[in-house]
Image (tube, one colour):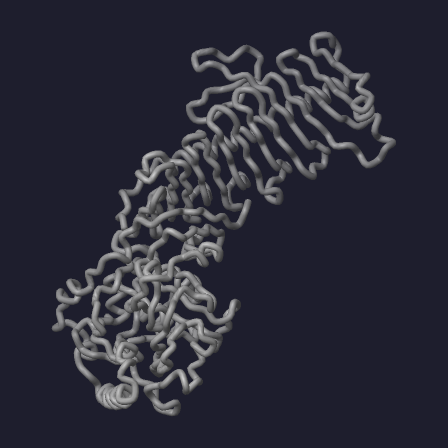
Length: 577
C-alpha cells in the first residue's frame, strides 16, 4: 500500500477568509469578568510603554514613512487596551504531545481556528489574546499568528511573528492552487494526516498582485533543530514554506522578548538580509539586548482535551466547498463510522455528479479500515486496512458484479495467503507464498445457486456474503512449485485437481507437467477397494475444501463486521465554509 497519495482539488469556493465578525464579537465581551491584566497595566508594562513611546517618536522623527510598519507594535486588545505585541505572546507547552512537532502544531492551529480576513482598512488593528482566540476558535491572520507562535515558543522553537504584506490568495486563504496530501502517520488518534500543499510549478504561476497587510510566523534553528532549515509558516493553512515564500514585504518581526522594525526602504522579503535581525542597517529593536524581557499579560493557554479532540469547534465538523470538489473534516469520535476526512470530487462545478469519494478513518474502527475510495460511475470501491485487523487484509477492491480482489499482509497470515481474486459467479483464485507444502496457487470454480434453488445432494457449498446466497464448489485446482532437487521431479506434484462435480481427482506430476503426455486419474466410482494412495487423495481433497471454506468464512465474517460498522447512524451534515 502506498504511504501517501495526492488528491488535486481545483478552484476555491470556500467563504473562509472572506468575512470578518471580530468587531461584533469584541463588542459582546463582558469586561467585568475579564482578568485584571487584560484591561489594565502593570508597573512593568507602564515602564515598557514609556520605552515604546520613546522608540516610536525617535524612529518616526527620522523616518515618517515607517509609521505603517509600527501598526502592530502596540495594537489594542479585545478590551480596547493597547498592549505591546511582545507581551501578547504567551509561550505555553500544552500536555498534548501531538503538538510538540512544528508541522503538527501548525496543522492543528489551522484546523482549530476558523480563519477570517482582516477587516480594518486603517493602521489601527485589534489583536485579541491567544486565550480569546482559543475560546472563539476563530480569528484573522493576526490572532492565529499570535496563537501559533505562542505554542511554538512553548515547544522550544525559535519562533517570530512577522508583519508585512502578501498577495490576495494568501490573505483570503484561496485554495484554487492547493492539493490535499494524504499520508499515513500518527496525528492525534488517527493514522491519517490531511495536509494542504502547493506544488512548485503551480506556485511559480500564482498571481502576486493585489497585496495587502498580513501576518505569519517565521521559525529558525535554535534550541530545536529544523530538518529543512529556517522556514515560514502560513497559520491559516499550516503550510511550511522555505525562503521562496509567497510573502512580498516584511515590516516587523517579534518574539516574546523583543520587537524589531525594518527600517530599510526596500522591505522586500527576498532581500538577502531580510531575516538577519543582527543587521542594524536594516533592523531596529525596541528593547536593548541586555534588558529584562517583558512579561506577558496573557493567562496561560489551555485547550480542554475534549476541545482538542474535537479539532473543528464548535461541533467537530467542517465542510470546505471548492469548485468541482468538497472536503468534509471531522474531529475525533464525531462521525459514528469513524470518518475523519471525506474528499469528494465531482464531474461538474454544480457538484451533482460524483467522480470519486475518498474517506479517511480513525484507527479506532473495529475492522481497522483506514481508507476507502469509491468511484460510483464504475461501481467500484477500494479499501485499505491496518495490519491490526483480525484477518490480515491489507487492501480490498470490489467492482460490483465483476471482480473482487483482496491482498493480505504476508507476515501475519499463517497459511501463506497473499492474494485472493474472485471473478464473480465463476472462480476464485488464491495466491500463496513460502508454504511448506509448495502450494503457490489454488483456483476454485464455483456455480452460484439462485436464492430459491435448493442445494444439490452430496455437494459442497460456500456462503457468498450478506444477501448474496450460496455457491456450489465444482472444482478445485492446486498448483505447486517445482522442487529444487531434480531427482524428485518424478514424484513431485505439479497440479492436483479435485473435480467435485465429475467425482474425480486428477494429479499431474512435475515431469508429466513438462511433457504434457501423462496424467494419473482416479475415478472414485471405479474404485471398489480404495488403496492408501486413494485415501490420501480423498483426505487432501477434504483438507482443500475445508481451507477454501475457512478463508471464505473469514471474509464473510469481515464483511458482516464492516456492515455493522457502516450501518451505525451517519453523522449530521457538516458546517459549510
